[in-house]
Length: 335
Image (cartoon, rainbow, N blue to C red; front, side, top):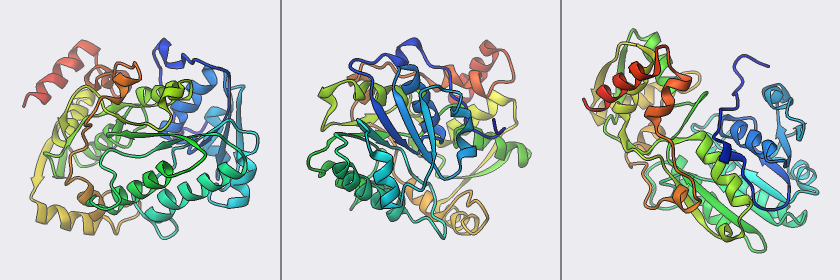
């Protein structure tokens, strides 16, 4: 298993509860952070799962699951997508990018792929489509290209005739291998504890990756979820600064946050967006100008009690005993 491959996280026993027949499911984006957890839960529930990936090496951590088929494929190619969907009972689209690159544009990756998937699913007679979007997605009013393209994809999926669709709109997702708490931990380690932070008061309701995957598994087994959209949020509302401080406390890193005014944060986005890997971009800044909070309890509607960031940080970031870590976390949140 590659050392940097995402690893399935531990889930509660109810995570793999499934009502209904076992299915053949194609999961696009199945080797990523959320995909790894979802594919693990689907396989545990007895489903047969096809996982296309451009780089099979990235998915080797899933190859040990007996009902998982890794396929070397480019899901953006229509003919390949048609072959992948043949014989499937359902398709799940988790594909997304946080930043654009020369070969990957928001519109193509989000809305473009959604359009191809809808068309090929119809052709292959795949009856069920589950689609991952984001809280704040809006094709017209969202402030960032990321959120607008997510909204465009949502609109296409909702309008997809002859398909039984369900849409999920999570807030920021945390867990082992995430791009949230683990990224802040790395940045603090590299910078000696100093972090210039854009939009420190931006608010989130971090949701656990295992709960997001559980929601998708539940929806697959419940016909009442067809045509529905579920916003997925954790139980706590935290600012970006609180999340950074909690991550630092969990790993015993010093944490000195420099709260950037918006004009400097925009400049930070312009400069860092030119660096390899694009650690922060102007489009990221624009996404932070709207809070990532739910207007309804999608997890509750699916019978799922969301887990707290405070309870789970010690299980994947911790370098100390859990009670000590929880005390430091609460102290940082109350600052």
